[in-house]
Image (cartoon, rainbow, N blue to C red; front, side, top):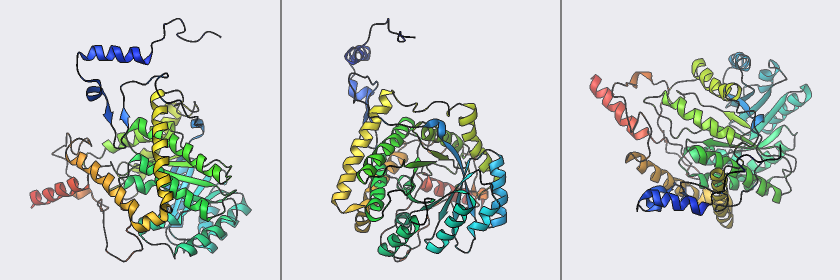
Length: 456
């Protein structure tokens, strides 16, 4: 077939489109009426056209290869094994284990699991001997394991290194040289969950990556970037595409040739305690953005994650959301689906350009770690978070069921298994930690207090 679809129709230029729109506006100002500005300072137009917008920057995504990830927190080996086997039988493709305590033997956990699956291991500690034991066991027995290490994430969220900068980087260097199943992990979820805008998220993730590229030899070491995804649907697709573009750009400067893997998970920032079933709708669109944006691995959040302990029902629903996208909605049948969408490609270019400019500013200030120690990053995130919080408080940033169309009969005080609000325990730290905070927290605390008063 040589004829192009719609070839017989006369082409309409961007100028003609704009003239027609201005005619239809009947004197109303085009920019004031139809152009809006995002929190990132990007002006969004009512239409995009190939002859007026930025030339597309090639970004290759392989949507058909996205993997469904299930997270399991390991506190009891036998229970974790049973849960893993059940989860794999129910459609999960990759298991993401989190281990807090080095007394838990990860090799014992792995022994009971099938070798055909892929497993991620995240440790909330940095132990070279422990990492070596698991890496060697997995290699010797043919397990598909990736051990993800990120001491900078420890600094950003806890305020202190595991030991200190030099010791942690030395341990990381030793670990990644054990085998190619030990990977560097850039956990950038904290930036989004704390309120950073998309340009900041991209720039900080890039600076986070660059710290490791500068300090650790990573020529053949696998690299994973983990990011949180919000509900600004097209922007989030563009954000992930920009992240891949920028990460590849920086890694090539260090002669890194391996593909950087992206793990995506819905944000916690917009999740609500009241009208909690709406969280399922939020996570669905966020997972869609993650897949269409080209994430290699997508992990979902349970709708009740902020106030209930891990439970089979919440996990099953969150996993089934991804299974529906993959097996019923055919999200795995087309590679690079966003290619050719002028809006998304323009957003990708704008986000990438602005993030690269901010990244260069951070590097001129001696990098991410120095900026964290000086408090620059924390201050900028707080400014962005406060701006978004004010929009929420004024009703301009909407969370349905919370600051718009709330259900006055919804009572949640008896449902709380977890404390859903930020806890801050004053203690001595090297830096001010970056604290994750949901938009609805203050509103929910006030409403819970009203519930208690009414009950009394």
